[in-house]
Length: 612
Ligand code: G6P
Image (cartoon, rainbow, N blue to C red; front, top):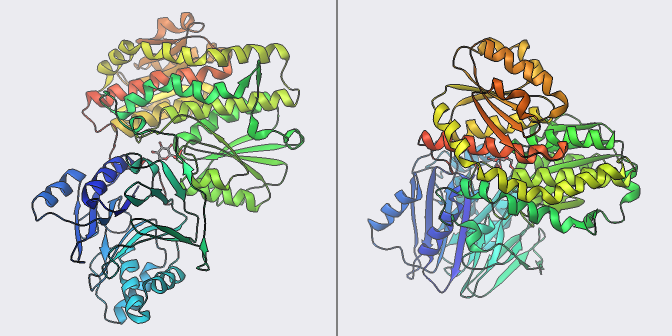
């Protein structure tokens, strides 16, 4: 989704803005632009449809844009097609005020109509232009820029993170936030705003997270934040422990491949601090034993791959805790009038901690009296801050749009949480507890082992990269896993794919199987192996080619049915999906590579979805 960077200080702004925008590219975008106030106090804007390289060409083709204050934006179109005019920054009619904005202004049509009636012409189709025009209108009327900003915030409805420049105040940048992430960075020779911490890592790791309703005024050597009532407030500064190299490719062809390869380490960092002296210890849950024992239901809520983690969680937590556990898509859950109460725990899973639907689901759950526990990767993100309990995955920055290491760490942490609660409630035998704990400790090494089998994944991908349609089948945890495998493939390779519970195959999908159709069968769940084998036999009888993912334990029973067999090490049954997803990720990656796709930035997709 859209990205924002802003700088005010002693250095030239444009190179800092372009570098920041480059680091935000991963979020997904279709146009980009910058605005700078020049030393002669003139606002200058350059913006264009397309990649940042096109913006750079535009900037190179004209007199250099000088100035030590500027804002930049990468746009992911919502209102109005991607074109030069709709790109940000947007300016008011007098060209004095420029705005970059993430989010959606819901009442923009009504405001636009009222300004048009006053004779103010509009140029773009965006909701953001309304902010720029309204700001200029109020600035003229009230004669004070801060009064104008608060007047605008009082009129607009919806979500926003915004950066504002006014050429009458050439050393000052204003920022405001509601329901869209925005943070302030404190640098050595200037200050920053950004929608995402990765844009700032090259300059500073000291940040403040803005909250809803806050407005900030930044100069080169000062930052003042105000609350909704316009009273100055002092806020905590946080140190981000990610470093710049963690957000760089480090010799890999793609971020996605790098992040897949980092999964052993990411799982280790997420799990090992939570295992002490042979027991699982989740510090964030200390003192909550009574509450956890009284739970009658768990709802897991998330979007995309995080929802697929929730599907794994449904099977694992239900089996361990023996209470009903359901996984919901956040976009459905929030509008479903969910039956919640204080004996229901809502678990929200989100890599970014900023997904709008997940955030709204969280608020709905709290409103209905449930506690919210979130599993989040980005420290200080909105979901993390609004949850009653936050468990962080320590996966480090994830840049590729298609998630990999965030998915595996979320899954490992959710299973760890399940075992912890089962132990607390006396629902797991000491013997099984010990076995699963030993397998948890061995998990990072086993992840690395699966990653070594790269040639097998490359071979399968080069054999099947030309498919039109691929079907994933599996039962129980393998079904949950198939959902993620299928999503990975369609996201980055643009091949149509579907995931089906293997037992459901005969109720529809089997009609699509014809000679040469590729079916990826997940056969890692030992208790249902014979059933899964029968389903493989059924699709082969109709001419399908089958790639089978199996464990060392299950492989002997299915290898005669496999055109390609991908074998992973054995681990505890409930942990198996953490290993089994890796061949699926790498198969998708190499298929996309063979097809020449833009793997890290697939078309139309965004890393962090901050609109409905
Ligand atoms: C987008 C991303 C997915 C991600 C989903 C949820 O669609 O492309 O990879 O799973 O959002 O994001 P979250 O940050 O909440 O995990």
